[in-house]
Amino acid sequence: MGTAVTLVDDAPPDTRQTRSATPAAKKRRGRRENLAGYLFMSPWIAGFLLLTAGPMVASLYFAFTDYNLFNSPKWIGFDNFTRMFDDPRWQKSVEVTAKYVVIGTPLKLLLALGVAMLLAQSRRGQALYRAAFYAPSLIGASVSIGFVWRTLFSDGAVVDRTQSLFGSHVGGWVGDPDWILYSLVALTVWQFGAPMVIFLAGLKQVPRELYEAAAMDGAGPFRRFWNITLPMISPVLFFNVLLETIHSFQIFGSAYVVSNSQCGPADATLVYTCYLYQQGFKNAQMGFASAMAWMLLLAVALVTAVLFWSQKKWVHYEEDAR
Amino acid sequence: MSHSMGRPMSVTTATKSPGLGRRRTGSLVWHVGALAVLAVVLYPVVWVIGASFKPSKDVINSLQLFPGHPILANFKGLAKGIADISIWTFFQNSLFYALGSVVGILISCSLTAYAFARIRFAGRNLLFSLMIGTLLLPYHVLLIPQYVMFQKLQLVNTYVPLLIGKYLATEAFFVFLMVQFMRNLPKELDEAARLDGCGHLRIYWSIVLPLCRPALITSAIFTFINAWNDFMGPLIYLNEPGKYTVSLGLMMFRDSDGVAANYGGMIAMSLVALLPVLLFFLAFQRYLIDGMATSGLKG
Image 1 (cartoon, chains in turn red, orange):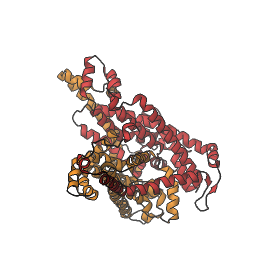
Image 2 (cartoon, rainbow over the protein chains, first blue to last red; image 1 turned 180 degrees about the vertical axis):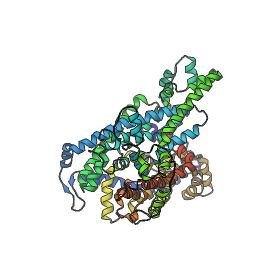
Image 3 (cartoon, rainbow over the protein chains, first blue to last red; image 1 turned 90 degrees about the horizontal axis):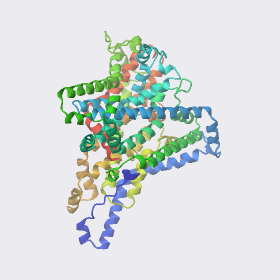
Image 4 (cartoon, rainbow over the protein chains, first blue to last red; image 1 turned 90 degrees about the vertical axis):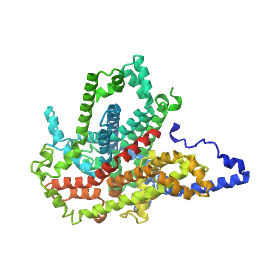
């Protein structure tokens, strides 16, 4: 993960210790440190084994079985996967999720970057705007906001009427299979504050002199953005793209609540996890749902891998920036 | 927003040529842009406040942000509870879940973070990478087998499945946040304490934890808000209305009979459910925003 996960601090070894300690004492001390380390880590290690690693293995096993929670799992090989690929509702859920991710995430990040650059000009009131723009990120996932969203996008409510002013009458996005997904897109874009805060912190670290030097050389605003801002904030951009993409693959609550627990109409908001939930917890198809979960994991892993692979080409960490 | 994208740093040009008039128009454009975004962003929040004082028939169709004749009937109706369960029950349950989560996260994540940041033990880099890996892992892969496990242990319809992960530091984000903070504390503190004969537990408790207050506060507030908003966890694990959190209570309200007639009540309840989060935000927004900002920067 590049510089992201280097933990080793290359601080010079404790001088006091190296001067006085015999090799045996040093070894003893090392062992004590190991013991202390693992004792402090023990909650995490227990959690990792019991709640992460163990369930992952179990889920991989279930994916190849027919399992309804009450009978014991029956091995059926790749049947869940072949059934899944032939299932029109599964295909629909992939399509809906892909659309949501591909439209929602770039819009959200563009808005976040745009507003961050607006605020980075540090005029008066910046802190206030920043706080207000951040608030939706904290409440956006709640059931309350789900209800609010459904109401605002209903037939005859404010969005519908505003749209009608421009001569396009839909009659409420939430009732229309062609439109309801865009109300979810709007909901995620509304929460642009979280990536915006991260962009803003990144923009603040770009040295002013760079812009001054570039302006002296006659670079216009667009050139300055392209050649200075973008490379300098590329690690932050990478972080935001990665997290937001992975997140939006996993949307569940908003889709469930805004669509009146139906993930519809006509499966229009049948996001991947919604279908997984229906299969696993409504139809007790634990095997099929596990297979679905592993496909989601593979998709997320693939996207992550592509992003990490591509970062060599466009992400500049401080060490190799000039 | 397009003007801001095209002119990222017009402030530098403004300071170089301080024509007062130009500066003032620039500032005006800036404020108009920022206010326009602000209006759209805050609209739903302001709307829900106004709508909870409207009669049910006006909630959807009236474009007035605040009603001409505000009524309290929606809130009074809430006192009757939902399906014979007092609203207060849902709040108590949510409060229990949220505070229980906060305690768990503060203990387990700070212990883990201390080990990563301040103890040099064999294999810690590997474990750290694993921990970061879980940050990217979709929760849904764990959903089914965890449910099966808790079902076999007869812990479904209790709060154990919802809380246990918090006591076992499975929320890697907070471990990461605390590690970043602890790594920046001066090493000399540990060394001085060690010369005085302090062990790791003493150093953790009396030196590192007090100095980590900002990171702990940030983690506590995020944890509280996440638990308060959590929907999927309670939806899957709780199935008895008396144990429902506010999120599930709201869903039950919506699915109950006669909600069409009591739309105002539903919106009022939504507002009440949002209030704790909004108040937390108003009180602690600095901690939250700084926490967010550092997580991305050092990531």
